[in-house]
Each structure stands twice: as C-alpha cells, then as structure tokens.
Amino acid sequence: MAAIKKTKFDKAFDIILYSVLGLLAASYLYILIYVVSASFSDPNAVYSGRVVLWPVDFTLQGYKRVFQEKMVLLGYRNSMLYMVTGTAISTALTLMGAYALSRRDLPGRGIVTGLLVFTMFFNGGIVPLYLIVRKLKMIDTMWSLVLPGAVSMSNVIIARTFYANSIPTGLLDAAKIDGSTNIGFFFRVALPLSKAIIAVIALYYAVGLWNDYFNAMIYLKTREKYPLQLFLREILISSQQSAAMTGDVLEQELLAQLQEIIKYTLIVVGSLPLLMLYPFLQKYFVQGVLIGSLKE
View 1 (spheres, helix red, strand yellow):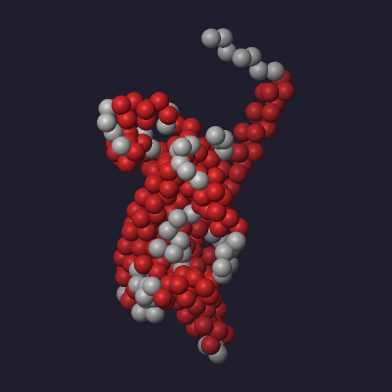
View 2 (spheres, rainbow, N blue to C red):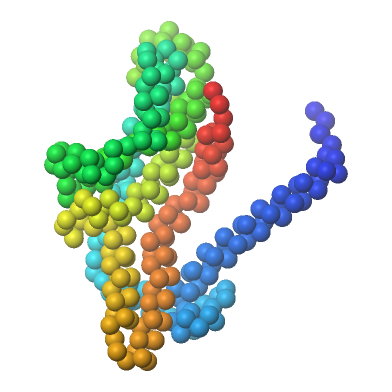
C-alpha cells in the first residue's frame, strides 16, 4: 500500500503540533526536576531562588525533618493498604458492571445506564453520605474510605465502551455453543482480553485513593489509621506554625527557609509511589484515553 503524500500544510501543521507538544513536555519535565532538586538543596538556596535545575549545596535536611516523624512510615503502610484494597474492589466492580451494561440483550439496559449517569451530575451531599456510612458502622474503619466511592461512572463508561467495541458478539455465541455461561465467558474470555483496560482503570482508582485525604479527615478518628497524606499535612502545618510563633527575626527566617524545602520534600515523598508506578502503565493509560473517545 502506497504511503499518503503529505502536503505543505500537513507538514507545517506537524511541525507546529510537535513543537507545542515538545514545549509542554519540556515544561512538565522541568517542574518535576526542579521539585526533586529543591528537595535535596540547601534551604537558603531554595528560599533565595538559587536553585534553577540541579541541587545546590546538596543536603538531606528536608528528608530528615520529614522522616523523623515516626508516623510517616505508618502513613505509608496505611495508604498502601487503602490503595491496594480499594483499587482491587473498585476495578472488579467496575469491570463487572461495565461488561453487563455492554450487553445489548440486558433487560432495562438503557434505564439502568441512565440512572447511573444521573449520579455523575447529582448527589445527596456529604451529610447524607456521612449518615449512611455511620449507619453501616463503617466510621473509623478502612471501609469508609474504600466502599462509598468504590465505583466511578466515568470509569464504567470507559470500560463499557471497550467491551462493546472489542469483544465480538460472535465470540459469546461460540462460547455458548461450547456450553459456557455468561459468567464463565466473562472470567475465561472477556477478562483475559481486557489487560489494557484493567491497567487503565486500576491506575485511575489507585491515583484517586492515594491522593485522597478529605474522606479520611471526615471518617477516621483514630490517628494510627490516618493515611500518609494526613500526616504530611500535619507536618506542613506544624512547620508553618513554628515559623509564625517564634519572635526572633533571624530564627523566623531560618524556619521559613526550612518550611520552603519541606514543601518540596513532601511533594516528592507523597508522589514517589505513583511516579514509580506510572511508567509501567503509561502505554495502557494512553490506550485507555483513546478507548474512552470511541463510540459504540
């Protein structure tokens, strides 16, 4: 098959497009490098703006300040537990619901889909949700963070579109001839063919669960159950209060410098697990964005 010859307009458009995307990628990469470099730099260098790209007067002072709090490691453990458990539950529920909604022979498919989409735009608010969680005796438990928001309708739509466009109806008919049930087809055929969408949906849920701190502030009462984000928030607030309460001008400036480096250190500490996870799922993430843009 002969390659399509590009016109001058197409070539100019490609140059502009790749230039813009290159600038955006460079800016995001610079921000990432700067944050990491600032977390390893001397507080005075960061505060005075001498850090441009690489660390200045390399130091681990910010990390020592953060990890001297024993609760940080506890927060890591809690956050990992909540993220892994919540991601597994949410991904399983989302895929099962999406597969069911992708079946055109599902009775009341349109009504069920409409009711679920309705929840994307309207909800009862935080007070009724809190009352429900309390009624179910989930206050101050891991389940208060995992179950109330276990299913996102936007993720269901993405997965439903994938199943509707990627799993041929004839494949199900052939499986039924061989004696397979709908449940058996889902677990034996549909799931093995869904590795890309599983990775995408799991990444969406993992990011949301890892970064969530608001629900923990509402539902958790025991400090030992706090996720990492709440402990990092406490460290940042305590450093700000220490800088504001001191009366000595010189000491106040030193604390302000330390606070500046602590901010960048907290960003690195809080983002590191996701930064390590994302490269392994990047190709699936891009594919998932394309899947969500397709129509049945």
